[in-house]
Length: 385
View 1 (tube, rainbow, N blue to C red):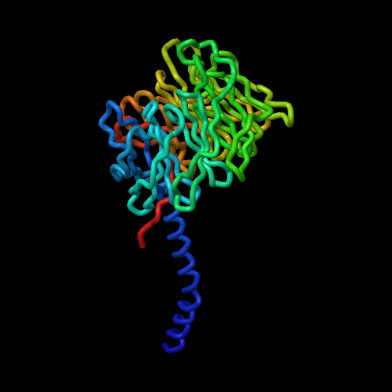
View 2 (cartoon, rainbow, N blue to C red):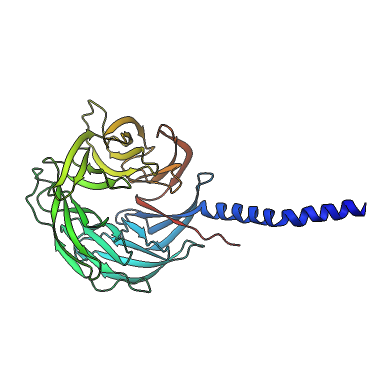
């Protein structure tokens, strides 16, 4: 009996580190599946109070409402810095537009206002960070300007280091392309700006030491009347996908060293024969790089495309209703298992599951009421212990 007990004790002692390690791994995996989702909205002429927070479990696909994270006017675009400590939102309020900085409480999901800076333009609609995470880039739609703000050590925004107005000939759409309209900005190296009014994605040289901008040597030229809104590129930047809001198209480009960009394809985001009103809104590539998604406002659908890995070209797979009206934005969760569509005019967020082999999406049965949702961004949550 003593031998048996000693042997069992020996086995337990031997297995304890493995059990502890397994428990740590399980705990870490559970923590990594927990995210906060911040939803930007329009508050003018709606019941919205500002930025709303949700908890999202990538393991189960469960979305849980947490209420208002911060009361702020018209936060139509929200981003979280790479550290997860600070969030930034545009306040799209015409000539009085601002950019707000917040601290992020990753346990409670509350956002605390740090400061606000003038956006230096009218109706900012997009924010992004440079590659170092030290600068915040702003696209001001109505004024056609872009601005750069340094991010200080405490998360506040410093005085701007750059302010540039897009230059070029306007497109043929007299109502929407009467002037430059910066709609998207990103800095994969150079800074690129999708200008809906100019039918171009403009290139700017960016000095990461001073935060300044200067005109670059190249740009992506779209067919007249395309109205470029947002851009997606693959992980190697081998192919660029430009969403045309006005013509509901995706134009595929391949960069050519020192020679600009070559157009590879242009494809519609709509079904053949559709003749109703539509404005394409959002574009994103699945984390596995095999599928591209866009949203249609009017047709109220998500268009799903398969990406040819060799040519970068697109083939339409399906068009799936978003379960609401005017899907201004959607977001694919960090695991790549789910797609969350924000339907602005029906005031709801609908959760879809993504089939990994086909890229197809189907509703999970979760729909949440949110007033005028127009943007959603994820940040890892801190799990209480």
